[in-house]
Image (cartoon, rainbow, N blue to C red; front, side, top):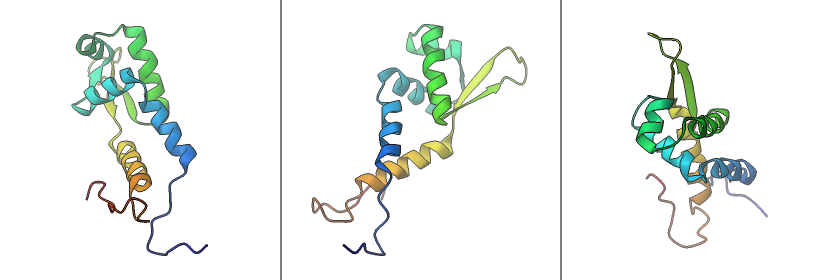
Length: 116
């Protein structure tokens, strides 16, 4: 079988599955969605989402380990940690998912339209 030179390579399904597993938890999606609006501390996230601090910390740890979320000490008070979205990692995930869903091979006849 010959692969067309114009077709984008298919993404690694194991990598995609791991990323989707991280996002499959509704609490992590809610946290990520909140962080997409701007930087937050653990207590702000808890107030906005109605979640216990230890639960927020657990999910933030998973999101940080995945690279989707960054943590930085507050410059004015180092006791506070501020969380933000790693925009580059989110864009990489978007491209990975779009590449997977792109129908350049004509499987459904719909054509690729992910973000275009």
